[in-house]
Amino acid sequence: MGLGEPGPAEQDRPGTGVDPAATRTDPGSGERERAAATGRGVPKKSERLLPGTRSRGQRFVVIDRLKADLPVSYLCEKLGVSRSGYYDWAGREPSPRAQRRDELAALVICEFAASERSVGYRKVTAALHADGVAVDRKTVAARMRELGLIPLFAEAAFKKANQRSSREVDPVDLVNRLFSSLTPGAILVGDITYVHTREGWLYVATVIDLASRAVLGYATGKRQTVGLIIRALDRARASGHVAAGTIFHSDHGSQYRAKSFARYCGKHGIRRSMGANMQCWDNAVAESFFSKLKNERLTWLTFTTRRAATHEVVKYIGHYNTRRRHQSLGYKTPAEALTTFANTAKTANATPAAA
Image 1 (spheres, rainbow, N blue to C red):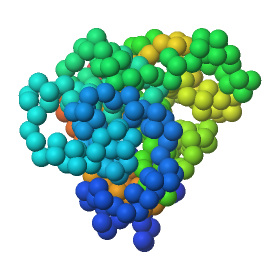
Image 2 (spheres, rainbow, N blue to C red; image 1 turned 180 degrees about the vertical axis):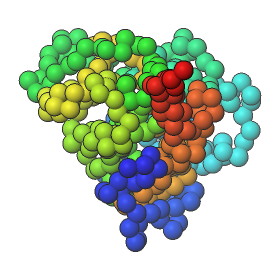
Image 3 (cartoon, helix red, strand yellow; image 1 turned 180 degrees about the horizontal axis):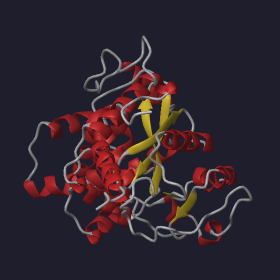
């Protein structure tokens, strides 16, 4: 299976794809307004995130960033501002200082929301650095405190954090924060994000190779399950780019800690890795990919069905692997980087010609 080819479950079929009207999201979309009014389709984590935003300017920036996924009227209600106030703000030019402050606040909120409240200020800072935003940890930490953005791990009492379910097992940290790899397929990172559709949320699991930044595997579904991440790893293994004894690093999500996932990894010789409990580990590559997926492809689209959203996600993965160039790879695409690695290995292993 090529890096730019969709798998059997995500192949484009007649009648699938982005909705014909899926351009810029209509803030007054009646159907989405009704969905918001009933409270269906909006994760509780997102609802808890929104009220923490303090200043009016920051609230308006958040509305501007999230209006592609949620109705403006719903966001205004949740953030305690009027729609007329938002539209007045949208037509007004803020001061440069206020604009920088609000833009940073919006970026922090978007990164935090994309992680589903699973990261602290260190990971948020790392994700912003990966996207080319120059900001220090202290500033990000201050903004998160100001906005009331508290990661889930910090909300839990220590006694709860130390109580392990009988079905969950945590591996040790095999990467030790050395977030690089010179060998393709030797270290993989996994993560899960979600995409809004009118049917409900579509969950996307990915498996990314650290050496080439290639998305080797992915899976989509309407639930966050162990099966979702196993399907993503199955696709990565089928790509032919996963080395024997590979390390798979992830966060402390329950899917990655499940015993069934531990058995799967043991069966296939995959070594699981997680950062220390209650500490942030730099998973910027996985988080940065989801940020690019949403900002470069999904932000201005709305989807009626999960199938349509899946089609667009798969298209972007193909584009990302075969056409998107990375500065960290010497401006090669992930596919070109894999080819370069393979050619270098062949040259190194070639038998010298007889004298």
